[in-house]
Image (cartoon, rainbow, N blue to C red; front, side, top):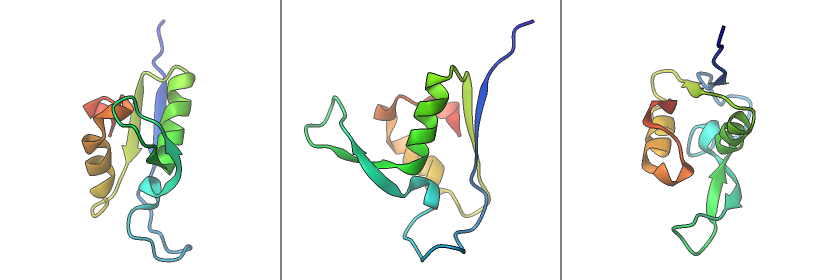
Length: 90
């Protein structure tokens, strides 16, 4: 029997326990990464670290569970194809 591995990020909550931030906490930048297509380092968001970890453990699919109003998460990942993510990742 072949089992698929799935990475899951629960992101449907509200940012009520931290100071107001301009975006969903899952796409808040906390570091930098270098892309092959750009010379200068680019901001790296929190959920990118999780996605990388999922890839290192052999996850076949990654899912981010969102609620209405958190459309900036799929918008962010859709605009950043250089992260190597499939359109079906959200």
